Length: 548
Ligand code: G1P
Ligand code: ZN
Image 1 (cartoon, rainbow, N blue to C red):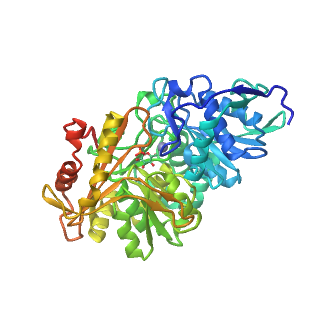
Image 2 (image 1 turned 90 degrees about the vertical axis):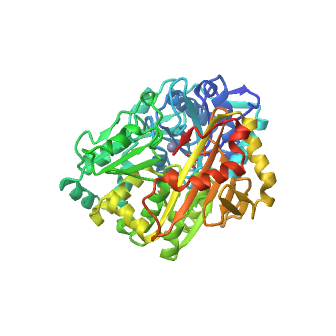
Image 3 (image 1 turned 30 degrees about the vertical axis):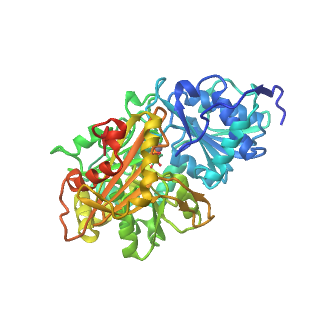
């Protein structure tokens, strides 16, 4: 390496540089303060020793993406990194980064995104470090990053690289003073992987025969991916991908694919002229929403349907080894696992907890209630992957989304499920709700609450079956006699105040009432949980802000 002007710049630990559920997320105005990104990036470098290594770098294109990439690049060069693989113009979806790390046997990657959080100058930004398996750094590494951030005294940066990102539009390998910078097409490798996993001919045939679809890219990173795959390769008519142009502020929207934020698509799918299939993805392309004509598929149900039918796609013809879900995700996929005679895993919230199970071949499919589904093809959840697996299943079964979902409930029963979010809370008040409930946990079994009785109460801790690492305090699970379940935890992805998430589920067997309104089916567990946890009283609220 022959950098002439490596600067060692003095810095001091910055309060709050602690990664949450999915990397470090802060307001753009915080991330862009002088030295903020630099200090955290150096903490990552200090934790992993990047000398001579190769990394993938890219983001969802949100405001501050280009500046952040330029800074990380200059710091990588000054820290002795051998090679950086970057998506053209700094763009890579989160699953595409994961795939590139694996395909190129890179040592890790840097993902610039705050996922579904709004973007723009007043929005959010984030940085997540992924390891060589392509997945989010496990806690052992994030703990090390935190320790390095707490003791940091300087960062290293060079100006020997171009100040602007102009050169990042030229595909190919560029060498600057010893560091190799390879600019790759963000879509090509990812699209090729999808072609390996799914029967594109069968899907194309279905579309040629008149099957219609709409994919809402929400002005986020999946626009180019979905246009290439759904329109160009699979033949969906031009315009099937809407809001396809990625924008730095996502067009002022909130790129979270759920009935609240993807309302336009959701409503369209309930109109008489709705297409056969609707889907959306989030800011960085790892989440998905699936909607059939007139019917919404809850993410927990989607995971279960995919697990039951995955063998219909070529990439999963060998079957599914195991299914993993996060603790607050409904038990619907457990029922499929039981029937298939395979293992069901319950992990803490956050994709990083699936990594070891996927690496060890213990789980093939994973999912979270928060619109995340994925498999062992990468080590992130993957929005377009879920869309394509659904399309492959629809093409093979020749039935509608509604028929497939109803058939699923008739076979396995239905897990009515909803998440209630209390947002913008005073952090101390939110912590107090959790602490108070925790203190009372041992006394809860046998305790009546509204019309239900608690049968078990647990402060969820997880021991990783592969490396025996332990994660404690991952949320509270209240189980009621009769099979209802409630989970409570605080969000780890917000950038302002606190959010309390209350997850609620109630099982109805195959011969039970499968056609109820979800909130009505959950009314008993909602009342019992709100009473037990004193939610409204302690928070001074009359109800949740978001019901999904
Ligand atoms: C949220 C979701 C969680 C997901 C994470 C990253 O985290 O609930 O399932 O893994 O975003 O996409 P939370 O805000 O609940 O900590
Ligand atoms: Zn995301």
